[in-house]
Length: 136
Image (spheres, rainbow, N blue to C red):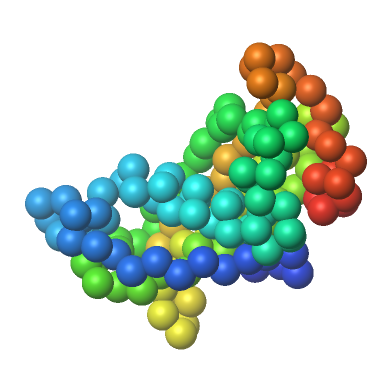
């Protein structure tokens, strides 16, 4: 994965106590929430918010998700979610993520999500040209 590429965005999160399990390690599902933070911030950085896409009648539901856990994250650590996007088809987009810790950028997790463009009725549609242009 090359989430740290030229079109990447970086989102910082601080691990909250409620995001850890009994062992003091971040509960695995919280990484998916952080992927959403990264995805939303990536879109915002391009000048195209998810809200504006929905107002135009385009939604991007997740149709696939994958996460590989490399090292534990713990309460009060600061993590960076590095996110980049790539066009898969005229109607599908993938986001790649790296979760890193500290100045040394220790790798905590990697993952990706795949999204299908759908209209307000849930029917597949092509991504708007301005969105495809961001991914080319």
